[in-house]
Length: 342
Ligand code: G4P
Image (cartoon, rainbow, N blue to C red; front, side, top):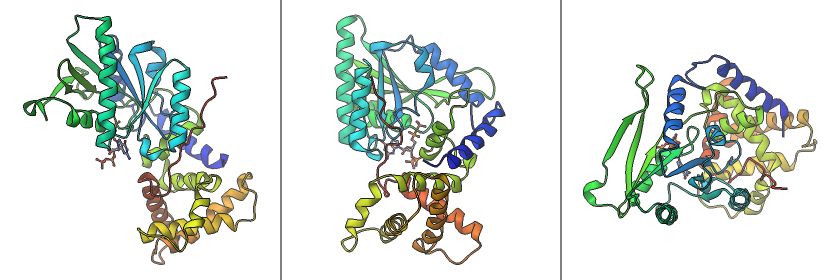
């Protein structure tokens, strides 16, 4: 992996984070939400820690590390449609070996959300066996920003087995009485008999900046706003991942048989040709820099960009490339290597 690109991204994030109370890192909203979440953790029946399946390690919600909720804690690897399928399975196995419940979900897939709800109801039945008196169950979704907490809460509410009159009903509670720090935690009903409610909480990043590699993955997957790191840095980082991954090799076999999006096919072909004709050493940082430079040049053509200023075109290549990555059209990557229990 290209350490210069990762260092640059880390530097940019640290710059922003140093300014406490910044509007991008540990904001006053996040601090207030963090306190509200800490107060509620002991009160709810289950805490669903939502992580991004593409970065099951880097998207950890730090607050959960400190709070031991054991069997009441479930790790939900959301956006699994964007991650490498077999790596998600390996990650789930890793968490289970750590005696932590884990499940993969795609909040955009109705059938999958139904299965998730069935899984949650089974956990709730186990809880009720332990505590006969509980007739209303509360689950709380927690996590860093952009992992899909709201999407999951809404999807569970939509597929939830509740009456039509209850659909679309939302309760709000305020997490902080301080002016300028208020941010609501919403509560949605997702099942009846027993009644199950899910609390959707605001995303919170860790108060202290983490290592450059983690920052880079959070930025590429959208947990940190693009403006902090800059689109060109993000696209360069993505190209370095793409060039070192086997995914692009599959594209070579598709040439001549491609159907679908013309631009996507063009980009795949361009990246494939640029990497496979590259004679440098992919393990060497300077060589990778050179490859990325070349890829930016040829991608301008692939995206049919008008001959404009260098800077404008680099920015356009970057935004288009990031968009293709984030919509899964350039493959499904799990950026965190699976940890070993050994
Ligand atoms: P948050 O509450 O944790 O901050 O995340 P939120 O639900 O707002 O989701 C962040 C983005 O991730 C949204 O995209 C959402 O649609 C997308 N998303 C959530 N779950 C999944 C999933 O399982 N798979 C995929 N592929 N995407 C998911 P957006 O572009 O920011 O918003 P929108 O245009 O979809 O409304």
